[in-house]
Length: 252
Image (tube, rainbow, N blue to C red; front, top):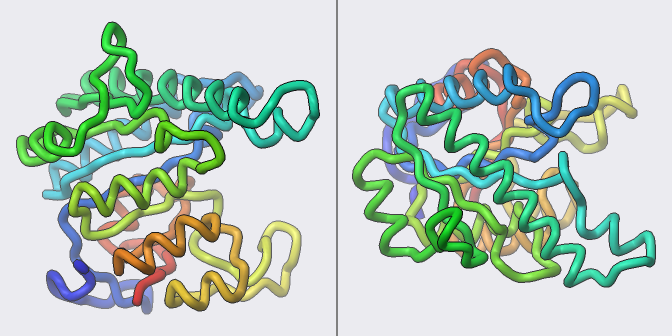
């Protein structure tokens, strides 16, 4: 797909390709306040300013944000008192709440943003459709894609890769808790090895948990690169895309 596009340069010892249209995947937990409240206005504003700076640097941004700061459907279903499709539907609504929050923050940061939900709720936001979403991106708007895939049993990671493939994105940026993909959780295992680059097949074979297997498999089929970096880095999205901080690239 887009791996061959653009120039390649080296920063921090890692080859970074200059992509243009990026699907940014954020976890819902990235919005949480230090005291555990589901939404921290300061964090929200900082993320919005970072995404705004990325657009000013010439990147076209689509955004998928999870709902784990509000509810996790799989965990709720595992507790046994609610079925998985219902729990996942509740999780989709959580992603809409987060998406509306980041849309408002982006507009306040001076960047036009549009929330589009896979679950139809026309009095609240636009329903997702591919051609209108492409039109918004072509106009320079940040498109915030809510509601996951619109179906239960699929994670927002899978939704991010699906939308990236549909919207002709050059790569998916997974902004996570650590600065790349490791062989194990580096917070629990001091001997965990950090990878600079992997193939999709290697990520699946090693059962690396940074994204679920369905997301990696779809990215492999679409030949879509995945960049993994830390959401906690200063100006994290812009810095990762420019190659100013460490990250891992998963690509064919």
